[in-house]
Every structure is written in structure tokens, then in C-alpha cells.
Length: 293
Image (cartoon, rainbow, N blue to C red; front, side, top):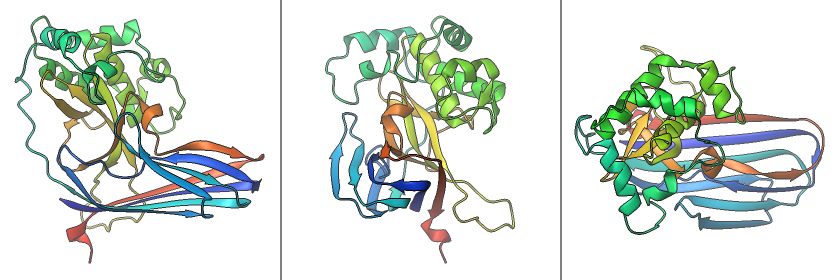
């Protein structure tokens, strides 16, 4: 599948802002069935400096500084990417979860993709006894690691309600878990905490999900959104699972960044020097190229 992506972020400030510094993670990732074909970011006002690099986890980042006084700040990222992933393995395949837990301890190397980086608590994902206990029902003794993760994903989809008003970006994991409500960020953090509580590596993945308009209805421009899901290390490699929708990751998911939790992969993060209220508008388009007239 060949996609065209657009991610527009627009800030409006009541009072002029004299300085801004931010880090962008908006470029589609390469590898694991993805081939980025182009990527361009237009920032207004134009930054004084822009430095591109890869972070520890291999995510492509751009660090900007803006010193022109402004009341409006726009980041317009446009990309083309090809996604062709192989079929997912059968849930019953692969080693037992206890064996996978032991493999993490004996696997050599600490490269950015090493599962050892994704077993400990992180800034947004504490290990909570109640969340670990919730996971245990999916992991009977001797059960497969992938089978357990797949079942856990399906249980979160069934037990938790999608509610965009229930949480905010900084809502603690414990609050979202207790309320059984939230959005994709919350469900991904909960699933990661549940897996890590059992010693199984789990990473947070940010990106986009292709959505389909209702039959007979046109696609609404800017109506898509950023998405998040989980990558689980099942002993031989990483497998993507989407607890918000209860599905495995295939060609409708486009990966942008992977880290320990949302704090590692935020699309736009930074600081401003200014005072007063501000507003934020985000518009995302994920369009298969063969649908473009």
C-alpha cells in the first residue's frame, strides 16, 4: 500500500512568543515492511536553526529553534511511504512466555532494538500490581508469549471504553486503568505495563492508522489522527498489536517512532518563552495514493 500523509500542527497564542524550541518526530520510519519515499516539513515562522538526527531508538528527529516573535506557529509535515508487511503469525505459535522472559536476560547486546530496554518501568509506564494481576489471566503456566499478548490485547479492547473526554495527555496510567476509559495512548500504556509486569518486553509505537469513511461518504480532509499501539518481543522478533482496535498490525498501520512510552516518541515536544493562553489544532490525513483523483 502506498500512502500520502499530512500532519498539520497549528498553535495560536494570545500574546506574542519571542522564542520557541521544539523536537519533531513526524517522519515515517524505515524497516519492518515500510519504505519512506519522501518527507518534507514546512515551519512558519521559519526556524533560525534546524538540526536533524536519530535518537537512541533510531527515530528520525528534527530539533528547531524559532526566534522570530509570533502569535501563530505552524508545522506542516507531508510524506509518502510504502507499507507491505507479511501476514501475522498464528497466535498459538512461538515459545512459552516464561521462556521469552528468560531469553531477555541472556540475549547479548544492548543495541537500540534490544528487548532489555523495554522491560523496566519508564516515565509514563510504572509497574503496578493491579495491572500485572490483570495480565495474569492471559498468561497461564506454559502458555505462549504471543498467544498471551494477543489475548491481553483482545481483553483490553473488550474491557475498556474509548472516551476522548476521559483522559488528557498527562493522565496517570493508574487513573486510566481504574476508570477503564481513555484513548489509544492510555490503552497502549496499560498493555505495556501489564506485559512488563510479567517480565515481557513491550514498546510504545506512534504513527498513523488508515481509516475508512462510512459507505457512500467522502473522506473528510484532516479527520484522521495520530495513533499508538504496542510492539511485543515474543522471543524471536517484534510483533505489533493494537489494543484500541483489538487487531494485529498490518498494512493499515504506519510507524513513525518507537520508544519506551509516549514521552520518547511525542510528535511535537518543546518549550516556548511567552505568557497567556494558547490553542492547538492538529489535522492528519492518511490517504492511499490510489484513492487520489
